[in-house]
Image 1 (cartoon, rainbow, N blue to C red):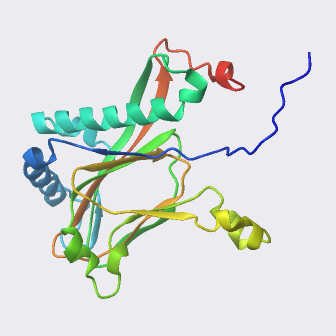
Image 2 (image 1 turned 45 degrees about the horizontal axis):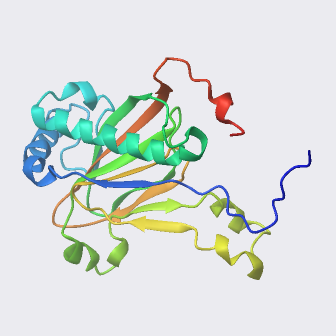
Amino acid sequence: MSAPSLSGLHDRWSTPIGVHVWSQAAQHHDTLIRVLKMMRWQDPKADAEAAFYASPDDLLNRIRIPEWTDLVRFLIDGVSRTVAHANQAQWGAQHPAFQIALRGLWCQMSNRAAHHDVHTHGNCSWSGVYCLQVDPSPRRESHAVFGARNGVTRFYGPYANLLAGAHNDFGNAYLQNNVWDIDPIPGQLVVFPSWLAHQAMPYEGEQDRIILSFNVSVHAASGRDETHAYANA
């Protein structure tokens, strides 16, 4: 029997990114921000006056209040929905049960033009950024130097590294729209593949930019991660 024809036009290798909004953000953020700021002040390795602060990545089990538990549940739910969407072609509409393991959860606070340069995350399959605090959008975007890019998270498409080589001409204009800026909005979670290059652009404002970052790994509920069954599905 001959193989079916693939005649036509095909788009492959899209990049799934999930954006989710926490309905309880306004109710819980004040308490969570106070707790995180207190942890910074109590951190013996931290400079309370520095423009940038990153906590240890063990916050999952260090904070034990109901508001934190609710937030972690929301983060896991956002990851679950994103993972199910990303794998629907391989898993089908009735996807198999899976488990999510948080491999690190930490807080970052920045101001006075602090930024985080381009990077990816290792030893995990998905990562996330959740915004707790930042200047309101009109004020943030009115910055005299940074403008609308003030404090955004910038993602770089998987072909971005090709544009510095000999692959750039009129015929691949589709590669050249290779960045996506996501505004920092309190209560908003962005879930993305850990291999996707990204950076936190310089931020300056009246309020600190406070975010949570995390990494996760995903496992079959049975405890056996046999992905080969889906490789050619």
